[in-house]
Image (tube, protein in one colour):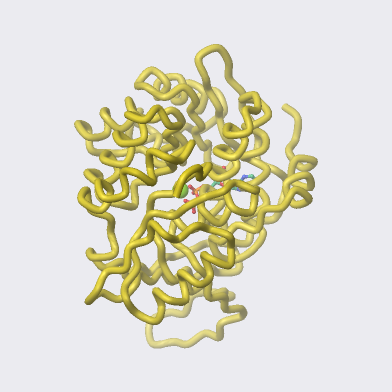
Length: 310
Ligand SMILES: Nc1ncnc2c1ncn2[C@@H]1O[C@H](COP(=O)(O)OP(=O)(O)O)[C@@H](O)[C@H]1O
Ligand SMILES: [Mg+2]
């Protein structure tokens, strides 16, 4: 499988998204206002976003040999994702994530992610050829750290672009992973795990970004919750506020962000352009329930117009 632009390494799950007005108290019932059943999990979401942005993308993850696994792979294929690297594991159900969102956009995830649906170091070693043939390798921390490290090392050895979503809280492995990453994107909580506290404003976000940059990556994006995202690179920085758009469910906005960041970098765009593009992609994802991105040129343009100038 020569010549993919990117490989997303990570979770593949059945996503069941339930919109309710309010969560019921114990021993009470509430109707579901809207239900969506989607191909989900961070790896799959990022692959979907990349495919929607015209990137030739493959997915390395694990599903069971069950009907759900068949459906997930079918959906991924029709999304234009190369699923040849996806592993089918016998004797395990595929992963399930239930995302219950209330009318105030507060989500709660119920996750059934069997151990056997996680990638192992050996799985990654078997996929070495695929990883090294792609231009970019995107990893997240919803997989065991040894597997994530193996994927990052493998990509780095072949001089591929290593994009990391999430910051490891394991001090030893974390340091190595940050050193291997070209691009680090962290939400506020994840950034806080490394630099001490989640950043509370733009200045703190840029400071956190600088601190993370010193640990290895050449581009860092840090979320400042409720405000925007701080981007830092060796000779520049930019704070991009959130787009003005109503939030229904923020799930998957980080995945869309990472997909757009990666797509922009693969196109060789300048960091300030890529930064705004990533925030626009996140903005294009918060308006619908569930983590599956719906990225199109028009959706991103519309969001770009809604990002306030600072
Ligand atoms: N209105 C908005 N416009 C643009 N970006 C947004 C908006 N609301 C949230 N975001 C961004 O979405 C991202 C959500 O990230 P994260 O919590 O990691 O999502 P997930 O892990 O579910 O994909 C953050 O970077 C946040 O700044
Ligand atoms: Mg995230």
